[in-house]
Length: 369
Ligand code: PLP
Image 1 (cartoon, rainbow, N blue to C red):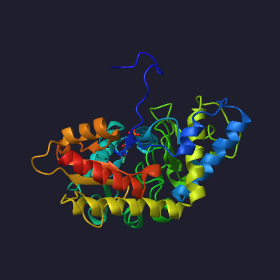
Image 2 (image 1 turned 45 degrees about the vertical axis):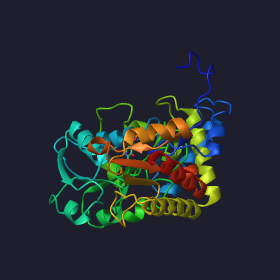
Image 3 (image 1 turned 30 degrees about the vertical axis):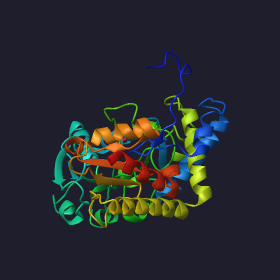
Image 4 (image 1 turned 180 degrees about the vertical axis):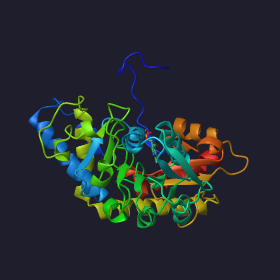
């Protein structure tokens, strides 16, 4: 039965163990109930600056132009291409899952001549093949943590051989869950999302771009809202100047992001990453002990998002419905042709705990029986 008003029936308290969003850190959830600030309030501006600094630290970058875009991760992808692709630019895209596919689509829409380098799903990006796909591309793009397949790829290997090209990394599922060193790795621009390992609801897309990429940008991109030239003044820390109005900042969401980042920094980045790694390992070992087969290539598995093959004779969707109905627990289906073939189990942000692993293994066992 659907709710007639927001409060007429309780919103179910789900365990969000799918590919995102995950359950926010309690601090981020609490922050959503704080009083709302105006977007030009000095108090808000100070907090926005703090968030940009925190994002730099989590990302391992000194880029002045680092800010949360007011939209989801896909807008980060769109911003990356609309601001940097000049008509006819050669853009090499490593495709090893759905989000690489999306990069191909978005880059082509902005007039790029896309050279796609396909990989089997479940495999990491092969840097050698990607780097030799074209002698002189303007841009090379890859997904750091491919959420559709549960695979991590070596972005530093692309940075080491990128030559004059710009390197774009999708960090939607990696940010806040594993170490990222954009500057050291040679990444020129990157985007992320708030709703995964940062442990904040969906709605913001952290974005960063270095001077090298910014100088090569399209002067007047075909998208006003995501024009980084105009957005420079929106986040004061990005320019060192006066904050100028561009659009109304989602102030409540920015403060929720601040709370999520505060929590991560209070725990300590290394400890947060170790917590994700331990939970992921325990889950993957437990699934194998149950006789299930992991999908992502060994040695390249994400801890925060595990992909597992649906056993023969088991109805993948029925298992997901059982978990939702009986245990208020969401896990993800595969994407595209893998919809019935794999499940995706996310243990991101606040959810990356051993207690949750114990729970999901037991629940899944019951669901499959
Ligand atoms: N890139 C990756 C790796 C993702 O996992 C996602 C979302 O799941 C996106 C991009 C798109 O982000 P959003 O759904 O927030 O627009």
